[in-house]
Length: 141
Ligand code: FES
Image (cartoon, rainbow, N blue to C red; front, side, top):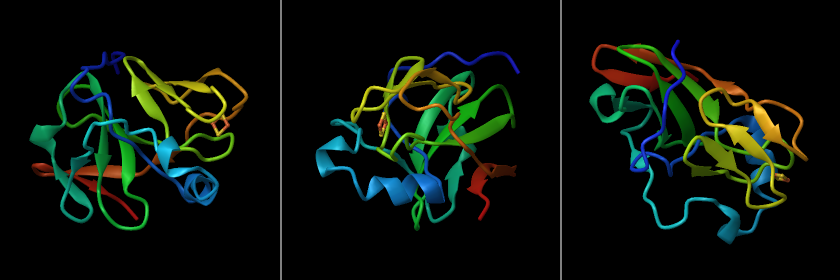
């Protein structure tokens, strides 16, 4: 997959895992990382594929228990999901261009791969299973 670039418009939404949500409870509301941007909201566990730009990363809210997922789309149906919560202590990440930055202690992650760019986090963002089904992206539980 060619490394996606990020559009500013879609640079402010987020992913989750059970571990990330556990740590999220320790974060203050102002550390949610969303700034003034509204997450791209889907219905239940789906979101229209047409709303996810190619060659970009987009934070989406699928709804439910673990709503925020960073979708990295290459071309066509090439879509991968990552948690949007820091692997250090679970704070919601903020997307800044090609990085996800943690407002709590300064960790940085590559928004296209989930790799750690700077600590204190040492673990890559976990993947979140998603599947393209027709014209929607579905979060797989
Ligand atoms: Fe993200 Fe500590 S919770 S760096």
